[in-house]
Image (cartoon, rainbow, N blue to C red; front, top):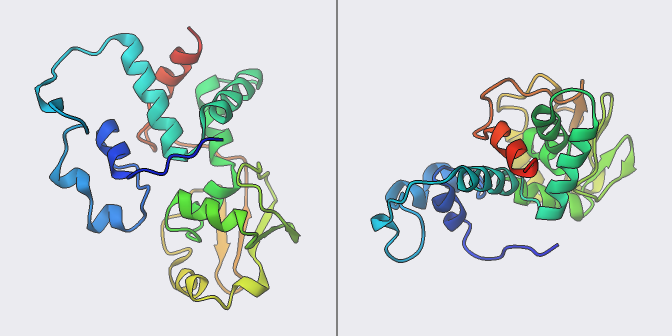
Amino acid sequence: MARYTGPVCRICRREGLKLYLKGEKCVTKCTLDKRPNPPGMHQQQRRRKASDYSAQLREKQKARKFYGVGERQFRNAFEEGDRRAGPTGPNLLSIMEARLDNVVHRLGLGRSRPEARQLVRHGHFLVNDVKTDIPSYQVKAGDVITVRPSSRESELFKIFLETAGNTALPDWLSYDSGSWTGKVLSKPVLPEGSLPIQQQLVVEFYSR
């Protein structure tokens, strides 16, 4: 998958909202606060009315960049959500939330999704006592995610020990700081409006 390596603040400026791609820096030192206009020359002067297609495309791009996945991965997730019973939009977001890198971030063991993805790839986590280094791995209800014992001594994870679990966890996750263990309690279910993503526009884009 081609990976974007440019300045991520441009992504947030293009989408017009914070996607928290840099973790704490997005709270304390965000370029979007100072430069809310889209990147590029003369963007402030462009006031063209967005078409329906443009709105759908931008929402799809926003959702894709929010989770940090490529187009093929996101389309595959949409097709899987479309095959499942129930509304496609919530199914799609449930699939994205069940990614291992997202779960690690939700547990507070990665300050951003990109950082959580890198930690997963480096093999710092066990899923049901099995080393798992695939960020797209789909967790299931009952799965237990644990920081590997050999990783707990690193300075980075000592910081996480102080902060993990302090943030509000979604109802489908739990975390025990004493054992460095998170547990998936149920299938990810997102309340309406809990994410800055209009899922219906994403569905309309792929349903054209």
